[in-house]
Image (cartoon, rainbow, N blue to C red; front, side, top):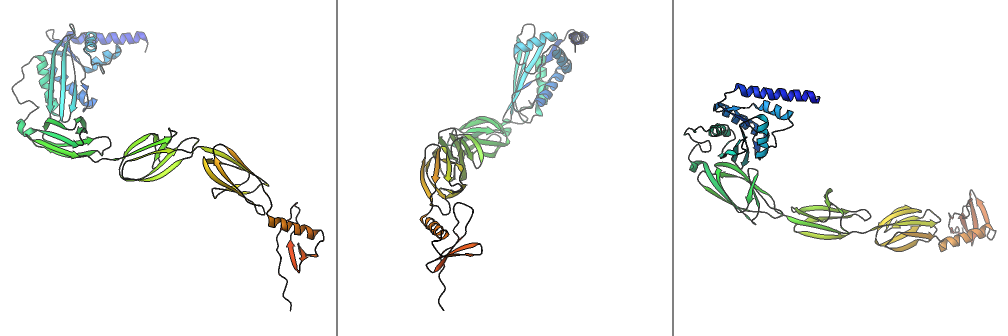
Length: 437
């Protein structure tokens, strides 16, 4: 919308207000009502309904010209104002001047336990003076506040309220109100009644509506206690609660800042302090550059531990010839060449290749390191190679048996296969000669 069009709408709205006021009785005060601010216990919709009822009741007094809510919102919107959030007297007076009102009515409503509290203020726009300030406390269902709006409207209009039972008390107090005194072991627990925190134990709450109420006691490191209590009119209920303490799990790490997991769920970074029930828990610490730490504990009392995390280092395994099997702390890793990551501290590494001597090395990891091995033939394999070479050179009688070569050595035959490789593969042994017939 263009600026000209907006100004036209604003001018039209103001002319409509002036027309509205002109048509009203000149001997009545022009009044606008700001929506009651809710301070807890009521929804904005409920506060709006009660404000509408107060506005209607003010009209019924025949003392005020009450500005329509919709018209007021339209004008304020065109002027860039919103009544919501306007709680100070200065803001209310500014709106009143903008609307050309004689008086403005505003206030708040809240709830504590079963009690509703209302604060209504009547302000003179010209002088910014508070003409009346009305405070009401109401015990009972929210529907009873509707009737209370009529009483407040009459008082704002200066009309004497007829002598009738106030909505706060429909019967003698002795049968409708009671009290409760709540204590706990240990003391200092937060005391909630009907979901609202009212203080710390020990605590006494007077003028509590007779009937059923829900209470809760909450204290760090203790299990929350909740129960329903019954308040009798004219009586004080004494309630003492022995709170059940939880077990405290405290975990630290060195270095600090490791991620902490409880039963697989990330709880944040250490240090961690948790209050837990008796049970078995799976703990895990994880930090970049360090080996994960894991442990399962049975928590039956307070548990505190500082975990020294082990830094991770790399080990490069290589051998000549390649293909040696790698065993690290008696666990098979693969064959050379291979790179492995392991935590700092002592370890045992072993390389194994058939026909070669095993290479075993003790490691004390403090940095990245390498394990290099030049493998050597076993003494037995060397002997077999020597015999095979001697047989090939004619040192022993030999003959061909299928694809194999047999050498006659000391009355027995020694079998081996010849290959295209530099090193022959020994496949036979010395058979025993047949028995003589």
